[in-house]
Structure formats: structure tokens, C-alpha cells
Length: 135
Image 1 (cartoon, rainbow, N blue to C red):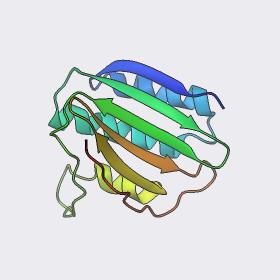
Image 2 (cartoon, rainbow, N blue to C red):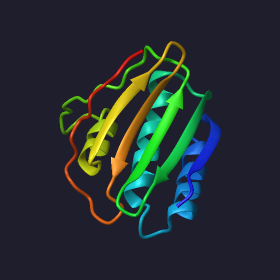
Image 3 (cartoon, rainbow, N blue to C red):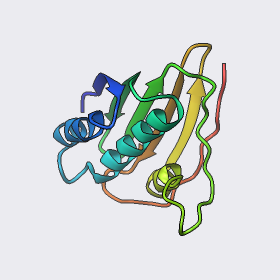
């Protein structure tokens, strides 16, 4: 499978467009977890880096593994997996990503940060947090 790369602005209106592009690229049977991850990663950028932030979404993979990457221009705003209470209305995005991903993590350099996850396109599995690397 060839990869998909999309450059877009992280806005609420971009989320359904990105999900649609992922569905078209992967096919409807393989895409639900990838679509969820894309939604949650974009929502994190909107909430913690800023509405309208330019990002790059990449989908790569083989038959046994799909990788979703979202790169933004703020290497300081690191995602944090946290416990949320039943009454809280936000803060579940990374927990959802962690629940469906085989593994996930963050890489950074001096100017950007990339949050990524790897998915089994055929099955949902409990996730494991990957090693976080910095530059």
C-alpha cells in the first residue's frame, strides 16, 4: 500500500475531512481505528497547540500494520496520557488512542513534534506506550 500524506490546518472542520481521506485510502473495513486516532490527534493539536495550526498527517503501512503520524510545529506541547473521571468531558483522546493502538509514541526535533501510533488493521488490541524520543 502506498502512503497518504495530507497537509492541513488543524481545525474542527478539518477532522471529518481527514477521517474521510483515511477511509478512502485504507478502505472502510480497515479504517475505524485509524479514523479514531486521526480525530483524537487532531483534537489534541487544536486544544493544546491552537486552532488553525498547520499539521502534516501521514498514513503508511502494510497488510499487518498501519502507522498514523501527525506532525505539528510545537515541540514543547507534549501529549500526556492521564486518567479521567466519569464526569469529565475531555481528556480521553490519548486513552482512546492507547486502547486501540498496538503502540504509540512521540518524536521531536528542534522545530516539530510527531505523535504516532501503529494499528493492526484487522483487530483492535490494548495498546502499549512506545519509547518517547527527543532531538
